[in-house]
Image 1 (cartoon, rainbow, N blue to C red):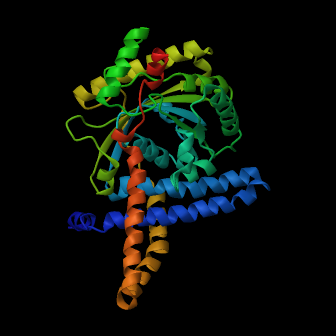
Image 2 (cartoon, rainbow, N blue to C red):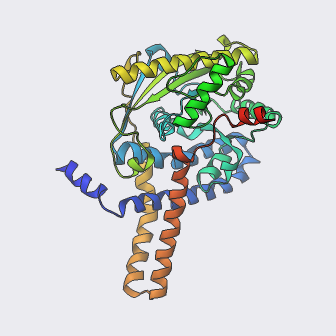
Image 3 (cartoon, helix red, strand yellow):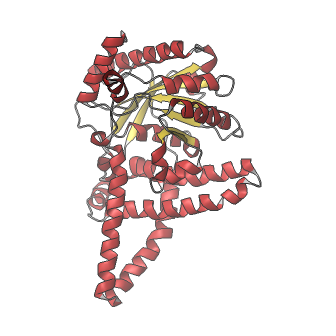
Length: 382
């Protein structure tokens, strides 16, 4: 009975709009508070970071709420028990594959369940800092914005890794790195395999050849500061349609699978070339593991379901009451006593807001991801 009622609510045409409305309004409020928090930055930097952690968590909770509580999605973590006891208890980097439109969301779900979502940071293109709400939150939370210029990025990565190491204990930082640089398409995969053949690298069946420079630069600064690197491989059942963020928003239940292995940074090689070889070997292992998953439906490590915590649920309920009560009051007054002009203006605002959200969702879509092998192609032409 309860399940049927929830399905009826999910099928209500305005529910995706209300979810997006809560995200936009709460995101704007949180970013305003992040801006105000800059005052604290010049008084007590540690306190500034702690406040930012809790504020930014509320933005990422919007995504994990929709995934975990709204759509009922879940993920199984395949990991050695000895490695698992370190998760959420140390500064770390996660090397994630980038095959699906929502593999990043599975990583955020794991971060939320281990209570480190507020300090989970990504390596992102510099232009993304200007994306409303998400980009602004990344900027305030010290995300690593790269300019795709080697000399400039060396300095950026050095400063960022040093900054991560100064976070107070208990506020653990998780860096998410997607070494493939873009999501896989048949065209990109073909180009990746061509480059691998030309250079004598392993031919990957399911992944793109990883870009190693950013990883190598990071590792050369991480030793002695960030104790562990985790290899994270996300997969979804191959006999089902590949999931998208719109599926989640529409309430489709999805089960993700994550294979994670921990490596101590002090055990990794030092040189740039050796680190590149190490990363390519990790991706070769990823490829074999994913191949096994597609054949058997599971990974080769023990699987567990990490329990949900209700922090994202409580956060969403709070923001829903705070933002929806004024909205419903305004709508009641508008359609009972408002002018036609005011009603048309409101509809126009809704259309614009919907367009903005759809535009942001577009950043997750594979067809809108960046090129692969472009640099190599340009060098050949030159």
